[in-house]
Amino acid sequence: MRWDRLRNGILLNTAAEAGFDVRITVDQNMMHQQNLQALPIAVLVMCAVSNDIDELTKRMPLVLAALVTLQPRQYVEVG
Image 1 (cartoon, rainbow, N blue to C red):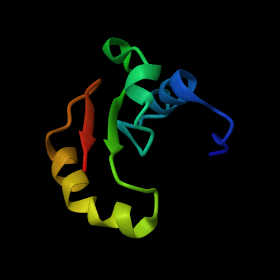
Image 2 (cartoon, rainbow, N blue to C red; image 1 turned 30 degrees about the horizontal axis):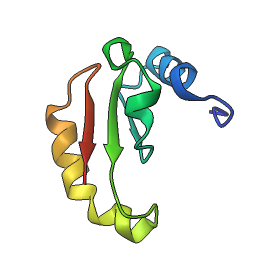
Image 3 (tube, rainbow, N blue to C red; image 1 turned 90 degrees about the horizontal axis):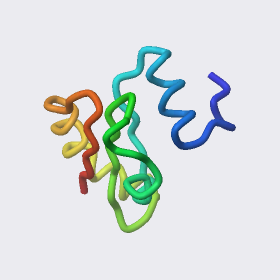
């Protein structure tokens, strides 16, 4: 979608306008970078000791469980 240059709030707004419901990220600083009250979509942060695919894969059951109950504009950390 060529969104690689979009950052922070602009990325979240663009995703919401395109019909996305949630952004899954490993950016644990997002809580401090965004106004959580004004999130246009839900944000799910995967917390791991590294961004290694093996570490992130271990957290997928938690991610899938969180997606079932995730509400619009909600911020959730799993891991």
